[in-house]
Image (cartoon, rainbow, N blue to C red; front, side, top):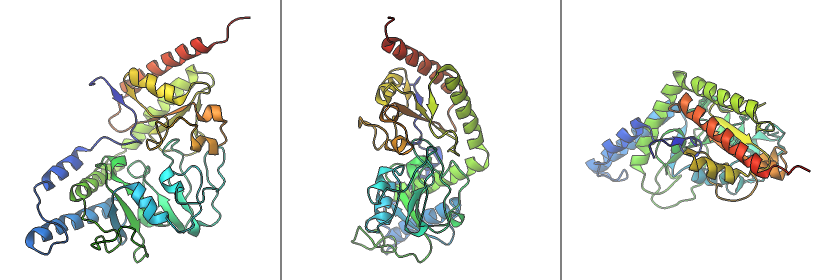
Length: 352
């Protein structure tokens, strides 16, 4: 497995060493953060320190941070029962709770009529397309944006934002809701009254400290220009593939996108077939959002952008990160081009 190349960072980024170290250091902590004895106070102090670290990394000083199990829980907490508008390009965790009828253009841009009654993603997980967030937005899904874009809660202009740690190198199973200070939020999980009464349940201390450490590392790497280098590698990959494969489309390429994401559409070559062939060749890619992979159906996102059903079912997502090397992408391009040629040869119409 050592010669495999991981190109599915939007599904989950590799665990950052800083996050792993923070979690290991916290493993011997005994106390429950809700207990009033010394052990409980030590656990509480660790959670609150992590809350402060995440606030600084995300530019959310003065906001309320509620730790949850991930963006799916965050979406339910922020969107359920509120009658919010959304678009079909939203992640299914959000679209499950909103009216997803907002217009989407061919570049994946959403037209928002009433920001205060709308949930809108910052960046699309499949295409990487970025949205222009209107001031006063009710809810923003920033899950894919944090760590890849210059970003601060205090200038996003949204009332509430959701994050998921494993998208930027933290552990799986932990996330956060960030709220304007004083924002009302009805708890869905009731019980002990943890997280300021907004999310009951004993805090996931290991996940929380790992998330905070990963957030700090992600912010540091972003400031050091890591994503500019990632974008250059992505652009070089796209240029090589488009040059060699007539008919290949990079969905959303005409719009501002995440620096690490490319959505390759080659009509007539099913996305799930591409994923399997690349997997056999040693490359981990996906046919869309990880939460919907394995479901043999056209991409909702591409369909909303106007792609016909065949094209919407013929896409893969390649998403990379700071440790992806030029040679990794060169190897992938060679394998992808060879597989595409085999597919075209196999399905070429016989001569008359």
